[in-house]
Image 1: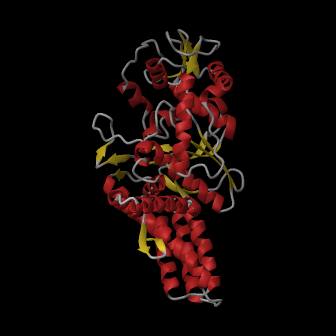
Image 2 (image 1 turned 90 degrees about the vertical axis):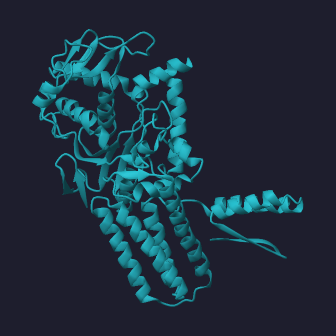
Length: 461
């Protein structure tokens, strides 16, 4: 399998440090609000990579952290008159609801909170100070970027240029303008922890380094995140981790491209800022997942209602194939269909080739739709039952790699039956307007209904 490594700016053959055991770290959300569509992209695309490794039979340790102490969190807690932990608990809970809708939690994911690792953070900083790579200053502690080996090697930034072009911050006594905070002295109204330097809290960069080391080891296989984190966050993670461990921090760095909304940068001021929760009010989040993997992860993508509608209808087609396949299996004849089997096997191979070429989910999704089309053709051709069984297995496996077609049919059927019963009651009560509304709602769900003497029948469109 080849992956594009931001560190080397080229595709490289990926093999884990430990045979068939991958250790991955993805920078997670700062839990002061609902996650937005931009937050969701790295979680979905790198969850898909994790799924492919599992499909190959590998074990995966996958960490998505929660930043639960931060300036934004403190600001929100003060505005609401509550503790920072209250804000964290609330939005971690909301994140998990969105994650479930995006089908992120089918496999085990470790979700450490920065505040749960304060002892390790303080010990890590103390080691950097002892080694001369960091220095205390008025209760704060800063990392000295001149002590980092090859600072700028991830982002391609030159240390001299960074030094000469940097603005002097609030604290002009830092050794270098680019030195970053490992520990921040407490300000009025802030939560704080005891340390050798002051009552205070950690900087953002150090939190990820410590959680990655604690849960995955000193050198990890893959570190992932949005390309906006490449500098300074990931660059600083490398600097402090390698100064502390004396080893490579991560062998592969994978970064996803950014999302625009109607071809404009997403921002609250422009009114085009969408949370995953906002989107869930209009679309099943499985539609959002399909949208997020329908482009190559390194490419920028554009979010719009038109594109979401297209993905909604595309997902319905995949589910319709699944339903047709189930129905066809019940009446298929016991015979062999070798040409059909060969086509299914070929599409499976092409799907895997796409995933192994730098996780090209765009091509992988395309192959799933090709398989859907071939299955429908096979049903029309009345291929044999054993062939349909094998096709069903492959179809389910490939969809699972992409995190799709995970809805339980019983849950969908129950919702449909509830709406049909409500419509029948409306018709009995001569509330034809409500009955028409429900018919329209069912149509939007991809359900066609037919009234007859025997009652109302339904099928997927």
